[in-house]
Structures are given as C-alpha cells and as structure tokens.
Length: 320
Image (cartoon, rainbow, N blue to C red):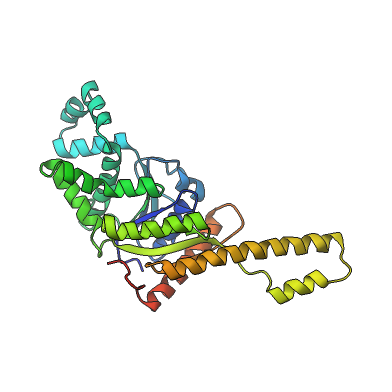
C-alpha cells in the first residue's frame, strides 16, 4: 500500500487534493512511516487541517506522537539551498545568486521557480539522509497544484532536457525525470468529485500521466461521495405518511433532494469506474469542516479502499 516513497496528489481545483494528501499522510504515519506532506508555495492547508503552523520551509510535526511532518516550499529558499549545495560556500552563493542582475535573470527563466521546488522535493526523497545514513523520509507526499499547473510542473524535467540537454541543470533534471518515471519509487494519485466536469478532467489526467508524462499511477480517489439515506420504497412511504405536518413535508423534501443529488453522483461514480484505468477508491462526504477527527475518518477509508483495490488486482491497462 505504501511501498512507493514519492507520491504526488493532483486533480482539479476544489476537489480536496490537500485533504487527501493530509489523510494519506496520516494513514502512512500510523503505519510507522516517517512521512512529510510537501506543499509547493501555496496557502498552508496542511497547517489549517492539523491546527499547526506548517507554512515554513523546514518540516514541522503535524500530529503529536506520530512521524508525520509538513512543510511549504518557497522558491527563494529552495534556490538558496540549491545554490549553496552547488557552490559549497554561502558567501560564493551570495555573490553569484543574490546580486540584482542574477535575480532579474532568474525571474526571466520560464518555470525556474517550479523547477527548484520540484528539485527540492526530489532531493528530500533521493538525497536527504539521517544520522544513521538511511533515507530521512520513508514517504514524501507532494500536495501538487491543480491539474493544469500540476501537469506543467511534472513536465518541467522533460522541458529542461529538451532545451538544455547537457550541463549541471540537465543532470539534475535527468535525475528528477528518472524519479518521476520510476514505478518502484513514484505514484501519482488523482483526486476528483463525483461531478461531470471534475470527473472528465480526472480521466484526462489519468491518461495524460501515463501517455505524456510517463508517470506510474496509483489510485483514483472519488472524494465526498454521499451516503444512501433511504431507498425508493422508504421515500414513497414517507411521502404518504399522515398527517403531513410542515416538519414532515420539509424533511421529506430534503430527503428527496438528497436522493436526487446522490443519484447524480452515482451516475458519475459508475462512469469513473467504467472508464478509469486506475483502481478507484471512494471517500465519504463528512458534511463538516476538515479537522483532526475528520482526517482520521478519511485515513481509515483510504486504507480500507486501497486494500480492497489491491485485492482486486490492477485495473486493465493500469499504470506501469
């Protein structure tokens, strides 16, 4: 379930990518895996969920007593660290990278900020070591940008190699690309809602990941799936109940509206299960703001869903 060490979570904006990343991280940490949820220069959603400040560049604990950490990578910090690693001396880095001319030049290079962020995430997985010489992290979960920006981010190593095939930057881009294409180390999880537009975009992302990005994929998570409240027979019985008090009428109307919403969702769930080449995991709608208790519930659902998906075997034409 958590065999691969570098996991990217992506999907359309508003489908719950950060929530899924948090719950996935919590599930892994409860298995004893030292896990870091990595945000990429964005609002601190992980800190909001876990009620801590995870807005800094350095990883901080998210849950007391569990090996779960979070950080928010910023381009300036990532570039500073990269420059110091390459030049070895902080004063030399300041001379080369922090003068006004170089700063303006770096801002003119398309995708430079995104490249150093992806490079830092790669470095955390591939290079960072603890005092015992073992990898510092058992699992890196990248809370990636929404679909369009996320795909552009993951294509950056290809873009760099096409434009600059030799040199230090090309060497690093080649190693990043090797990580993103390694089925033993990497998985892309896709998140969607059971709605037509997000579902369509999710299916396109699944295909694009395999065909254009060459990335190994994990699961397709359908977030916020409604429960069944009553069946049709029970609904009809409620509609015929006497006397039809205002409270009963309003309650039956609400239940009927929920049933219509549920059926619309199930139409998309069936569509996703038919069309997806990724194993599908459904996550419940919790009808409340996300906090620690809700993330615990989702973590349980993720583990159960992933175990069920694994027991069924890979989907046809599934990821490499």
